[in-house]
Amino acid sequence: MSDAFVSLTNITLTYGSTVAVPNLDLDIEEGELVALLGPSGCGKTTTMRAIAGLLTPTSGRIVIDGADVTRTPANKRGIGLVFQSYALFPHLNAFENVAFGLRLQRMSEVEVRARTQAGMATVGLTGFEARKPAEMSGGQQQRVALARSLVMEPKVLLLDEPLSNLDARLRLEMRNELQRVQKETGITIVFVTHDQSEALALADRIVLMKDGKIEQLGTPEDLYTQPVSAFVADFVGFENIFDVEEADIVSTQGRLKLGFHVQTSKLAWRPSGVAVGTGPYTGTVVSSSFAGGHREYVLDSVLGPIKADAAIDVPEVPIGHDIAFDLPQTTARPLAA
Amino acid sequence: MPRAAVWIILGATLTFLIGPFLIIILAGASAGEALSFPPQGFSLRWYAKVFTVESFRASFTLSMFLAVFGTITALLIGIPAAYALNRYDVPGAETIRSVVAAPIIVPGIIVGLALLRYFVIPLDVTITMALFVTHTALVLPYAVRVVSSSLNNLRADMEEAAVVLGCTRIQAFTKVILPNIRGGILAAFILGFVTSFNEVPASLFLSGPGVRTLPIDMLSYMEITFDPSVAALSALLAFMSVAIVLLAERLLGFSRYV
Image 1: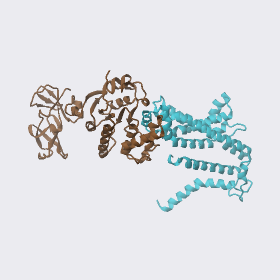
Image 2: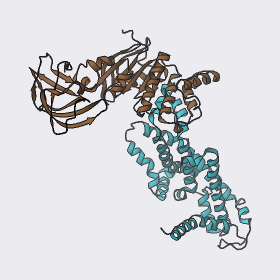
Image 3: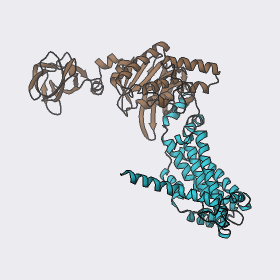
Image 4: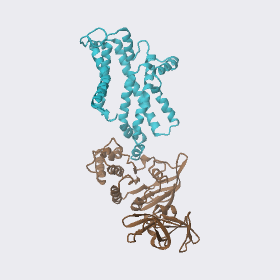
């Protein structure tokens, strides 16, 4: 048995006859901030619901803080869950929403008030106690939902797509908020997201899932620099992925002679890893857009479209013109499959 | 649209909506012996007489009983039914919805006849019981529909949020779901109450000697006695409805929900 703080051992999760997650193993350490990342339908939310107790695994074990909670109902697990929709109670004001869980426990009114006020202060909502959810902005509602979970002092805090409903500025604010809360409380946080930039920016470790299975598990640096598969590579921004056959790079459209030798079946390059302006290959510019620090090109080549970022000091090549490019060995990421 | 046309439409609408009500109030306040309009003189004696007619008192009590307890019973069945249909994959949900809605679609006279033939006569139930069951059944569609529509506005994850915070399923229902569908329940109650209180066709079949709902009692009273007391009673009932709505508005902020 693993001695991790949260340990999922060989769990299978099903909806009716559909297996959403088959035989998953996952260990999460105390105080870690873990992201469950993947496209919709990959089983990340299902896994989170299983940790919360809203879904009972058909097989396997879930251990939290040394106790087997596989059969423990959600209301006895001591887990916090912030829903994507926030799921605030519309008939209660912000204060009563935050106090809701505390009031269910046998706790004095004085303590309920003290802890609720402290919770409201933690998320910076002091003064908003009397507001109903409908009278608050999305960002404020989310902070009420966060406070409502935090005041329960949960063993694990689960967040479902915590940043996806917020605009760019609020997203940054909430991201900082989550990191601050985690640093202050030392709470273990698991959050679900489909956005790799969120996961890379926030998480200590990322669990990248596909079809109910863990595709890769590692630090953001690991995933970003050393994706193990084409799926992971694509997810973290290697937009040019090609098969390798003997000494050629192959796509469905054609093949190019590779300038170096590798023992791998696939190679991937980020747009920033493609050299533009010089090189042995030629492509026609199909689109060109200015992106601040660089210029984003889509080139039509023998291999099909190639995405390439050019430094801003390289003179712009107009659409329809040819440009030389290279797929250098230094920026190539070999992939197993 | 020209201004004049707007005023004509507005005037006509008000006339046809409120006009009959005014005619009834005035006809009931007539000093004459027969129901007529315009009224002959002014007197409140027919309003006073309403309270002295023994059968009106009995039938009013029966109608009130049916409207209040029939609607409450319909809600006690309808709220869990609406909840189940809304939250779970109930087998044959569409069929259940259609069956529940049937009393709205099927003419009351057919409901009454069918109940008389296949429920009251074979089972030999009392008239009051037959009326009670009928009114409950007639109100049930409104209870299910109105409560369903307010449940539809509530997200299922709100209940899960309550459970994760420590609620049992029952607590989640009473602490989170019920308070948020309160308006729907109140609306269903008022709708059901009015439907039951005004119900004539089905009750006509089921009423028996000495046991009649108020509208039927008023009909048979008019067949024998054509005095203004029926108009006076109608006016009183209309005032009662207005009072109920105003009270509900004052106590519970009814208009916020409808």
